[in-house]
Length: 295
Image (cartoon, rainbow, N blue to C red):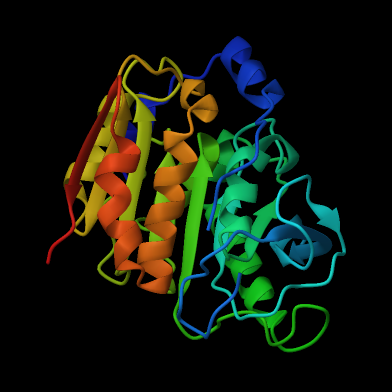
């Protein structure tokens, strides 16, 4: 992959510290259980379990968030019993200096909507992302998460037969795009790179529906590079632009989790009602929604 693509990333120490220190707050309004392949109609409580995984000598500590028994809303409950049902996997990878706990704004929305969300906590850097190591780490995390269906507390509750979804913000968005391009994972059927840059040409081995989210005044990761990545991607695809938005300003905008959850529900559950909600849920003051979804 050409290094020229990566020159679009302009991340100063100050900006990176701001990204790492930001806290994602709020309760995602998501969509209890139904037969395999049926999108849940009500939100779940959220549970979380920690797994100290590795890939070779590389630590891949992962917090797996999942639909749990109990009352929806509130903070994730450590080691809570899993809810009845079988749920698709949708990964989230945080940005530089951040953590899954700083990203609960979007992680909770996905888990409450009926997804198992592995969220690795990486001490990753630009070198790891640019040479593909972190993308490969996420592939290992996905493999390990799917294996939880065989034994342990999540056994029988993970849909291992339809593929997986991946998402991430900033460096995590680059990792996500890398899994569609230079370090392709053919299991991916849905993706959501947030505030990413272009990490390479789309791989012919990946057949994913891809939603990009970016602020067009982002001074940390180049909007024009994300646009290049979008233009290169085959449809079905969509781009939600927060007009005047910065690297993280859309985190506090409910259109962000609503649109991501709609996308995940359509692409992983076949929820056409969620697909049809996308234009309305993404629209409003200072947003621009573009989509090529096919028939």
